Length: 109
Image (cartoon, one colour):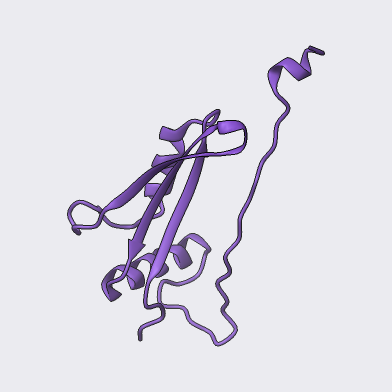
């Protein structure tokens, strides 16, 4: 049964964050080798507030074998059986944002 036509995964790494660690955790979400499956990860650099550099990593899954395998792995990470399905099962998209005071401000400067 086809559950999703396509899945777009994206993650942002801000200038002060460890982009390599974020990228590795992002790739850990994908249960197959991108290169072996001939899939590409798009990497874009953007400017944020106050011209801070932001790295954007994106993966687009369009083939049923990829979307099904990704969703099965995601359900397994949630503690569900890979083939679990229910009419009440919902997938939601959400965003998170974290804020921190600059180091100079913390020191009273």
